[in-house]
Image 1 (spheres, rainbow, N blue to C red):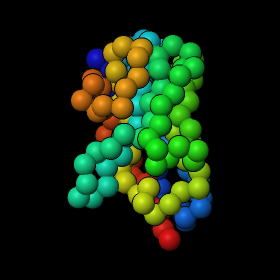
Image 2 (cartoon, rainbow, N blue to C red):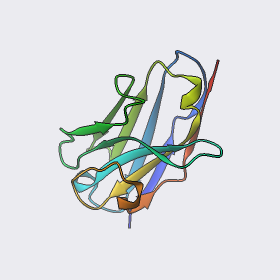
Image 3 (cartoon, one colour):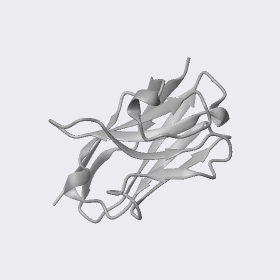
Length: 125
C-alpha cells in the first residue's frame, strides 16, 4: 500500500511559478515510477509528467507543458516534485500525484496503482 499526499497548490498570476510536492509512504519509494496528472472542470484527467523509478534519470512530459514544467524526485525524502514555470490560465486544474509499482514510467493513467487526493492550482489572467 502506498499513500500519497500532494501539497503546494494555490492561486498564481499568469507567468508565475509554483512547485508541487507529493510525499509518499508505505513502500520503497525509490522503485516506483511516479506521475503527475491534472483534471480541469468538465474535462478528463490528463497526463502532465512522469519520472522513472530509481535515479529518475528518465522523464516524460505532455507537449502542453514541455519546456515549462519539470518533474524530479528525492528518494531520500520519498518525495516527487513538479516545478511549474510560465503558468497559463489553461493550466488551472486539480493536480494529482500517482504511483506505479514498477520502475517504467507511462502517460496512461490506468497504469498507475495509487493516487493522491489532489491539489488545486488556479492561474489567473
